[in-house]
Length: 250
Image (cartoon, rainbow, N blue to C red; front, side, top):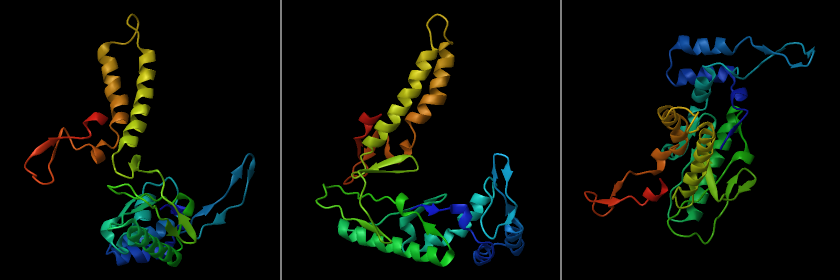
């Protein structure tokens, strides 16, 4: 789920109250209020500039402290329902629901979303339904893929879901993720290949350094999420190792 407007939704007095409720020192809460107070904005289009208008809410874009204050402002989201099933990064929130059937997890997810929407209505925060994505994860092939409700909108599962640059498929095989990032790494490698020449090209050591700096980070993006190493423990005998089934992806 994505917060619509993000920084623009933060209200000054409510932020100050939230910081005090969270136990931050009084002088810090007052500073945050001062930071948001007395701001104005005007619009420039070509040679035309509008008069300044006072801003009643919103954190300034570009300030290094704005993302921190925004996260503190939206912190209650991660205490709604089951906190262990909520994950956030910037203005994106992921909800994980675990159950015996997809119907059960869909109902749980719909309930969690409804709770977030209610919280948002009370705090002047809205969530963009167009950016809400759904994905069911199951070991077996699903016969049905029920929708999850976001307000009046039914969101049906996507073939794959991307979160923080990591592609998640229904069985968490990460094949699509590897294919996507391997293709990007290959494109970068082709660019480097075009710069090399056996006669007038750069030194091999320089090319090797470029590969490590430019190709490997792309190829291995998010590998911590899916690559268990050369061996992985057996589920029935944790002390014994098996060859990793994901070795062929590398």
